[in-house]
View 1 (tube, rainbow over the protein chains, first blue to last red):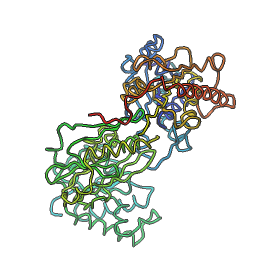
View 2: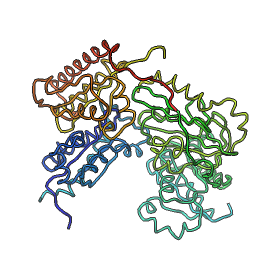
View 3: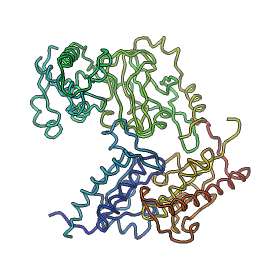
View 4: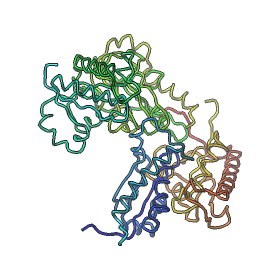
Length: 137
Length: 282
Length: 149
């Protein structure tokens, strides 16, 4: 029987140089603030890398979902290094392989297309949160 | 086409080019090809194990998303020939049309495309690994936080930031580190068709990111004898390793002695990148 | 290049957990895109921390400003740990007079959030100007554009 968790931790890379980093960030906010407040939370990746005790304890005691912008996988690598249990790892750039010609915006602001991709990825993450942290928990 | 073959068309339901691709697949089936349903193959590839055993595959894509090519790459199928409907129509001066339902004219076009695909010379001589491996020595240019690498030997460049690496009578081509950094994360690589004749400074495919689409301008002339199928699924290989694992196509050279006169060697291209980088502002 | 060009690297924490992290990020982008586009470069902190060669080399050789959301100052810590001392360190909470309660998602920003971004961006730009004015004695690149074997 799958282990039922109280909360999932969603960690985006928040890469500042590319639109993918902004989308990663917004995907997490969509899930944490709107779809599953209370069942999903986030934490600062930089704090984790810094070795903050609370952040380390959090990723080690909750299932983690990393949302990276690009194949450099900064969030995935650092959560793994910190001993976090990664249940799902997404790369925003992969969503654009199915959307030839898409223009999602910039690292500062998303276009409508960018928000559509955000919603789509948020749904994927939400499905995983739903599986990990069912309502009855 | 003498040997037995299987046909893998894309499943484009929402585009006229996809409808044409399906019709090409059906026409090829009439010519003896074993038809593979892309959706079933994607979900249960084992169902086609017997059909595919020992057979080469003809891949028919409707549009540049190249879903069928990607499936073939993921399944490591032995692809003999490929057809990209949108590109083939353009070469024939035809159009895939506006409607999903195919009229008599489009049905005839599908049969023409199928016949052309069967008649095309097979080009599965495959990539020539020997000679293209081995270590590469790089020079580099720094600009702000960017480091642009350029191989100093064995590579030739054009001013479109594309390279050719020559070994014997073959060359691999790709885009430079400077170009891939300008484009950032690549989401598509449109590979040139196997067997295609490419002129020097002609197009040998294209790459796309969320920032831009860029043609790959071949530094050399020749016939495409192999393409890097891995890029269909993982175009990011070009970002990660633009000069080796990110090679795009392999050409049998037509006249490298002449082509070479118009190309830059590593040090000369390094100087060009230095000049270009000074204007670089992402 | 006739004279070496000095640019200032800005490293934002982009802290996901706090609204101040969003302010830090947007203010940095504003400086890069609008206020000082020719004089600044932004460094991606996650990439920097994960070992980005270009990012760390830049921060070693050029002046840097870190912009952190809160007193934990992750960007300052990371830069000092991997590249060396920073030229200026800003903390959004200090600039805005305490812990900032606002929106995290860019889609929900209020007029107050936009004002906060503008204020922090202006402070960053001031630091850029101060650093560049003093660059005769500041960090210089070993040779930007230099060809290395």
